[in-house]
Length: 98
Image (cartoon, rainbow, N blue to C red; front, side):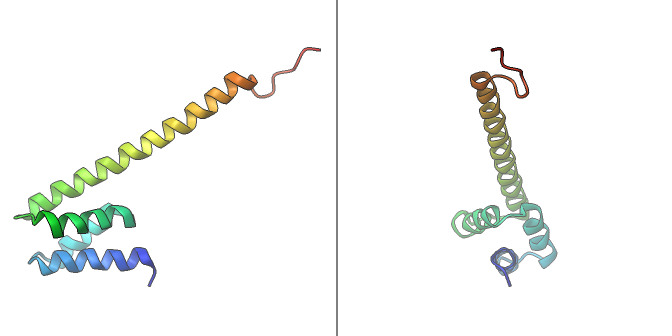
């Protein structure tokens, strides 16, 4: 069992121990997808003590939105770096005048 799968089942188990169906736990873990996001949800469940499935689902959506914003930020930084390189070095394939 790899680390991602271990965290997946830890999250599912945590949700089941809180009294919710395993299917709900699987849905939450599947939507979160990564070890980091699942670990973040596990920490929330232990510290935040949500009182309903809706609160858990809301937190899942917030975590997913944060991850998407992070991906967009990293993508923008990557393309900004490429653009700055082009400005500094000139366009790729541009013939140099001698």
